[in-house]
Length: 152
Image (cartoon, rainbow, N blue to C red; front, top):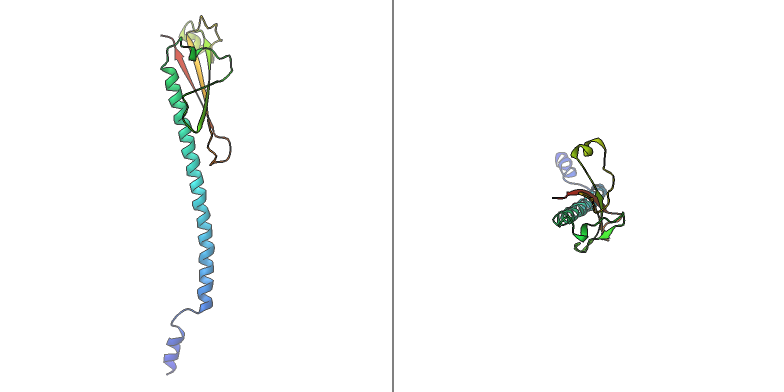
């Protein structure tokens, strides 16, 4: 009979042991839940930057596809122009600066040629600034891309 009592005393958990185990499990689950919410925010931020880069690339390709003498590619004198074909959720602006390059050796000797009179320009620098208007993410979301267009 003494032997039966020892076996019966070791058959399961007490209610207090069960509550302590559930409490520890709850604290661990809360810590893991915060990691999931942080991962979701990080993924959304990365996706937003990917969309910004895509919109900048799309705008630059459209501008490079226009003729060199098109009014959309006239020198902006540093004043940004609004890109009217921007997709919903983005504000896109761009600047154009005209340069005159006599020889391509000039490009190797100086970081950037001297700005030119628009009539003499044969090289354009296009800078695109894309801003996200998404209110889901906090903070400033911008992407800047620069490209060149050569006459001819």
